[in-house]
Length: 80
Image (cartoon, rainbow, N blue to C red; front, side):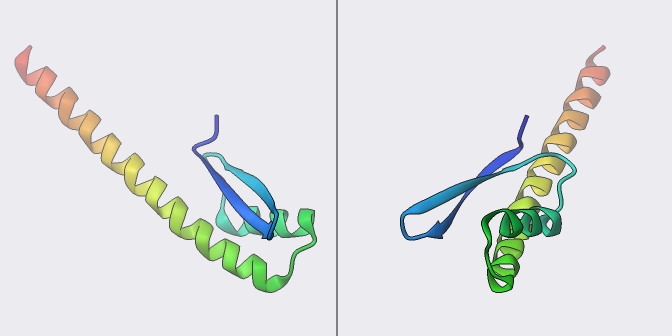
């Protein structure tokens, strides 16, 4: 199941979607995307940077959720 979908405008009237899965890297996703759609190196660099930002946000959310689960488990253990 994808963690995130990102829609990329590759032409004024054309959008393509990137599905991001756990373990994907911005570098590989961007390279695969530009090769598949015949885009420039400049577009690859811009896309890679955007993906890095989005994926850092995912990592922060996952870390926050992990900490909250640990806190919930510790509280539940203290009540038992």
